Each structure stands twice: as structure tokens, then as C-alpha cells.
View 1: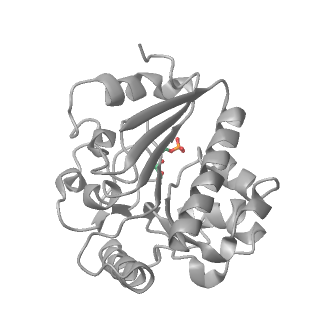
View 2: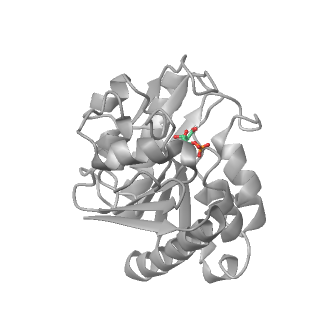
Length: 250
Ligand code: 6PG
């Protein structure tokens, strides 16, 4: 199940993703009582987070029933300019009435290994408590992802051992090649991403157009284009692209 939605510019795209988020959250909360999200870092989703923090979207969301996790983090303290947590805190968390106990950041101040094992524990314990599924892989209601120009997603970079990880939900990775920041990272793995109920790629800009076409239309080469590992088992994959990022699609 794959859906490609193209909007003429980044602003209209952000509006569409915010609308998608509100509709999906409203339906999920009415069905399950909670909405559990795995957020993307990077710069592209900032505009979506900012819109969710403002009306008409802000007051349409039941923030006490929304739970935020991250799909990846750089191993830096939470106040670092490189922190994905800090980016979301500034664009969204500080502006909405979400309880602090609903926000589960990856502890970037720890070593990557310790942060990853702690985060896997946090995720498993949370889903056990809130959704009661002890043996299954925790199913996020929404997994929000970006793509790098090199074809990475989350912090699963070309050639990374994370590409073939089949059991861990979260793992520590080294990252010493561009794109910056060249820092140890913690990333969600294919097993966690691919059980998501709604998996959404959000991509803008001409610089990514060729990569987007390769990932969607090209032959399966996940070592080169790790974003190709995203293939939800039973969930739905939706690409939200602006016209520039969709420019190379047939
Ligand atoms: C990160 C992100 C990463 C991001 C892509 C695209 O930690 O950097 O999670 O996977 O989604 O690198 O980044 P931009 O949105 O900044 O282009």
C-alpha cells in the first residue's frame, strides 16, 4: 500500500502533512485512546512541527493523549544545536500543552550504545503499559521519516549495519562520513520502522529529486539507498513531496 502526494511548494506540503497528522491522530485516539508517534529529525519537518503548534491545528489535537518518540538522535546533549529533540522542543513541545511525561527523548548525552539500549527499553515498557502488547514489535501509529541526499533515512546511512538489522528496535551507529553532523547516532531500525501503521516520508527540494526517484522507482539497492528498506508490513506508506522533490518521477 503506497501513496504519493505531491504539493506545489513546501508551505502547502507542510499544511497537508499537518492536516494528515490531525486527522490520523483524531481517528487513532478515538479508536485506541492514544496516538504514538516516531518523529523525524533534520530540517524538513520543522515547518510541520511549527504548524502543529499553531491554530487551526494546535487546538484540534488532544495533546494529553499524544506521545512523542524520535526515530533517531545525534549523540549530543539535549540543549545542543545538533539535537533532534531540541529542534522538536523549540518548534512544537514548548508551544503546546503536551505533558512532559508524554515526551520520550533519546538520551543523546549518553554513549550511543547506552542511549540505544535505554531507548529500546523505554519503547518496550511504554507499549507494554499503554498498548499491552508484550511479545509483538511495538507498532507506532505514525512513523515520520526524511531522506538525505545520500539516500539515508533516520540515521540508517549507506553501508550501515543498521540496514540489515533484523531484531533490535533501536541501535547505535557510527557516522563519520558526510552529511554532517559527523557524530555517533542512535537510530530506529527496519524492524521498528516497518511495523508502523502509517509510515510517512516527507521530502522537499530539487536536490533530493533524483534520489527520491531512485528510491521509489529504482532497483532495490538498500546498501546504497537505505531509505529503500522502508516497506511497511501491514501499514501504509505515504510519500509527501513538494513539486521540486518529485521532479524526476516519471
Ligand atoms: C537526522 C534526520 C535525518 C533527516 C535527513 C533529511 O537526524 O538528520 O533524522 O534522517 O531526516 O537527513 O534531513 P533534512 O530534512 O535536513 O534534509
